[in-house]
Length: 101
Image (cartoon, rainbow, N blue to C red):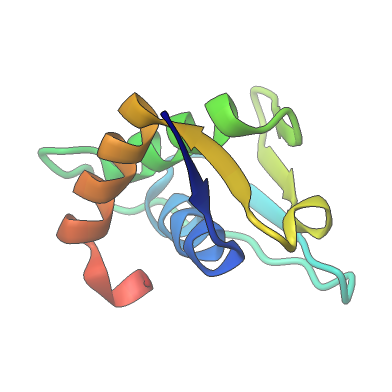
């Protein structure tokens, strides 16, 4: 079963990645704005790693190098589709980090 993830949910996942990921991230929005993130302490369930995994499986528009993670939101204004297992992981992330959504 395939589930649709809205653009708002995508931004929420990416916000978690930017806040908690231990390597720099860059976001390219439609306005061309850029943002970077600082390292944060690791949590028991690594929300940023899980959020990045969900996004990686759903789209090929994430570039990962040893220096940074980059994601172009402009291609997913109408959302992305997730497989059931990734949707369950997204739901766990959502429940544990509600302020981002």
